[in-house]
Length: 141
Image 1 (tube, rainbow, N blue to C red):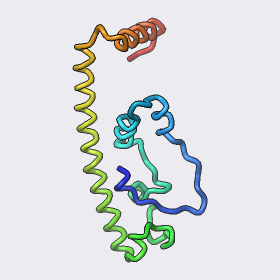
Image 2: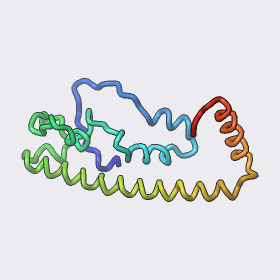
Image 3: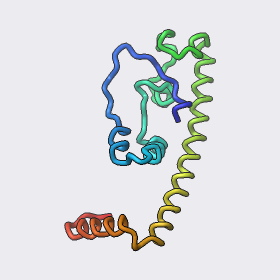
């Protein structure tokens, strides 16, 4: 996903909610297993600094962005070339998102199969215990 991002320099940087921080804390072993599927959802958007995300908005106009705020590879392009470049990166991102979603589906299926066969494992016992306690307190899964 990062290679399809087109970063725009901003005069004032807004402090944004960082979903990676929580995911990294929760899943220290391999946070990218959890970040990549999140990034491939419709919820994920960084239109404040990413031209690919910003181009999806109705009010987007690449000609309104100062040339010095564009990445180096786009500074010498005219408006039409810039739009085509953004569209090319958007198409690449769409392909990558589809791949991530397919792999995540396969990953979930694999995990489900493995957890069914490992019922005696400690982590499954803990999860089942927590789930039963939650159900007794009217939590729904």
